[in-house]
Image (tube, rainbow, N blue to C red; front, side):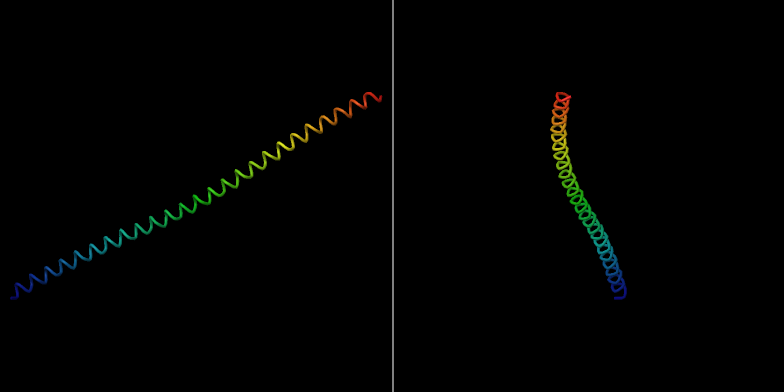
Length: 93
């Protein structure tokens, strides 16, 4: 009876040890999964922020190009007017 009791006690202790190991491994895996999920979410947020910055920069660049083209047209018109004024001044003189 004592021998059987010892055998059962040992078996239960081994089962308990194995169960604790499995629980520990699952916790470790879950912690790793949670950490990976947090890092993934953080990276997605960073990607979204960078994408928004890129869209804003592209929009700013488009406006700057439009303003440059307008300035070039205005400069060309001013150069033509200046040339006509100089031509008229030369006739008057």
